[in-house]
Image 1 (cartoon, rainbow, N blue to C red):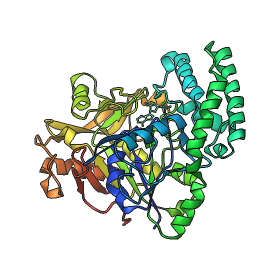
Image 2 (cartoon, rainbow, N blue to C red):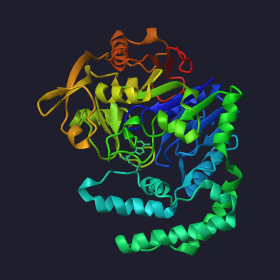
Image 3 (spheres, helix red, strand yellow):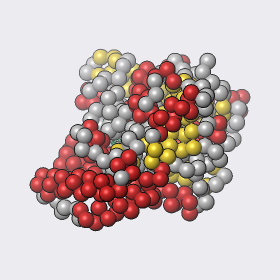
Image 4 (cartoon, helix red, strand yellow):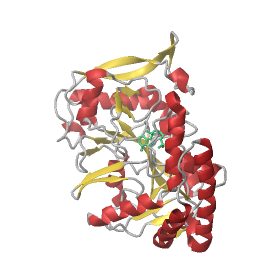
Length: 430
Ligand code: IMP
């Protein structure tokens, strides 16, 4: 069976964690393909509430092998802390495998992330501060360190020294900042290498072999399609390829080896950080979604900006990624509203537009054209089948399906694993 991809279709935080947790039990491998510790995937199940940042979030299912592929940037310190926290809470994943090709996020990347944001002033992006941009920049400029470098500890420590000295020049000369202690970092890096080297292998080769044996593989996206470095609202994007193309490049697999593509969409929209957001609700309406949806960043704790479902932006994400089905999450957050709205077009400079402009400055001028639908004004949290949903909620889901041109396979009506309606098998491709 071709690999399944689960990705977000908005600006991240669409509830991918829940969808992955739901499906991982059917998979042999759960592979994260992009991003780093900027991600925050929340899983709520009988073991409690867990926030994942780098570890793939299907690890609750025994036998699932978690992996981090080449397109990920790995923060060794944060990864070890995350694994220790999971262990403390009694979760012992199958051995985690890390791609030799995955680049490392070092403490100087985090520092530089902060300096670069401060320098941007009113053009700041609102990054998570996890060093993601600087780490991918080093990768692209061929100055990065990779997990595979940890396999030769002496050479690794030498490389760390060289890179840290270079970073110090940047920190002191450009930003007038305090240099980092190179020897301290070299010592820490040697310790990280001892702990992480046993996890490092040629993940991509393993995955190609597993595919040829017909194993079920689930590729876990991070962030969302609208934050993709190429397809997203640049510069208000993350630094990786969060879409399906990023999954193929990261895993080193041919495009034809990708099968089910499940795109998770909030029943409304959220965004953390800066950047245009045409359907953003200000004032009490936005606060309502923030409060009821508990929309606070899993990684940074920042309140998320909230707004109505944007069918233009969502449809664009589907056009780019080609969903085989949709997972609509957090429907219950809309339960008690008198009406719900869907943005079906934008008005930009007096013209009606039905596509997502590529320029963030143009998108910032977009005014939403709404279609109003009746609310259902009752709880959906106990719904488990389609028939349990109130007719107005069914109509809302059907309208999203129509506008997206893809069938809904999953509807989430609460954070817990069982607060889920499975309308069709998401891993089956029609
Ligand atoms: P960075 O990825 O930390 O560089 O941040 C770039 C932009 O992506 C900022 O607007 C962040 O808030 C946003 N971002 C990064 N990761 C996530 C995520 O997992 N969920 C939501 N937004 C994210």
